[in-house]
Image (cartoon, rainbow, N blue to C red):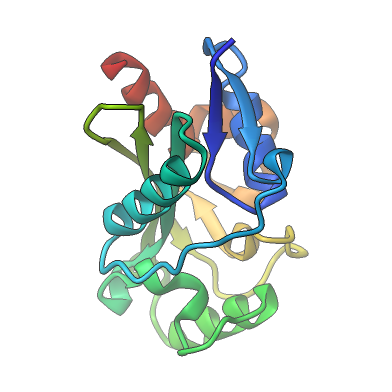
Length: 195
């Protein structure tokens, strides 16, 4: 079976992709499965730029079909920030807790109806000798006034992001609910139609 490389060092993200792609005709592997420790600097101005940088870098390295994603939170009251800068919003790599605290601080005094935001992802798939394919997905929601859940490691916004469609915090969603709204799943379903 053809291997498909998930261009990420994040074990949680690789596990999520393995689950979401279980019925695809590929053996899904992460960078750790190939003992790859190299990384690529995400210098792009957009999610699409960064997804392409990662997919291209690891495709060149492995010669295998490679799927990369980039995404983040876009908060309307903050002109779409943190967006592509998510982790490096303050100019350095923040911890999960710092991201939650900083977001709530930036939104202090902003009324609930104006705390609209979306979790967005852009996927880039590179198959050998083909042009990159891009798709995207997003989940609409609002930012809470305070941290309402413990942080899921690697996913700080899940403790302060209420999903509009289900009126629940992202971190409270069951697997079934998560699949209903998952921005990755939306993007992957679009990708499937293009393969």
